[in-house]
Image 1: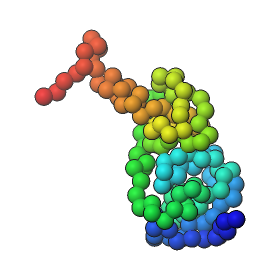
Image 2: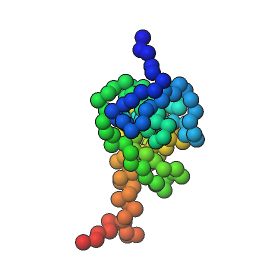
Image 3: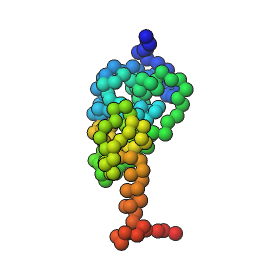
Image 4: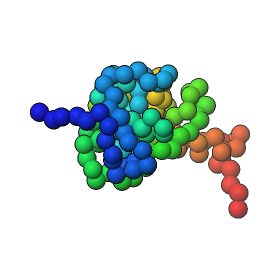
Amino acid sequence: MISLLEKVSHDFHPDHPLEFCLGKKDGNERYKLCSGCGDLFSDQSLYYKCKDCEIFLDLGCAILNNIKTSSYAEEKLHYSHAHFLRRCKPGPDARGSCLMCELPLTPSAVSYGCSQCYLFAHERCLDLSSRDSTSSASGAPSHTP
């Protein structure tokens, strides 16, 4: 059996200790974005957080000491949704379909998701819609030399 410490120091976030949270609602968001792997997880899960920064590590990442950086910090505001969408993976609770293409989500698909509504758009779908919005009214892509 693994013993979980109430506070830990972690190489991923050496500035402050991370505190253990046991299924604790924290703010308005029902889901948290793991700063290590990019998975979204329920605030009813076991996780560690920095009380001073918006850093969350799911239990799987918290027990690994070799996590140093993450590429999941990017946020976008998109016309398809009222909240900011953060680059992430839907994680093990993946359900539903992409806001844009309506194809099913997979737990490991790099997406942009809303941690308040648990809605996602595939990264490639948001990239395509961004390119489409730069098209001219005639339907031809606009081009600036």
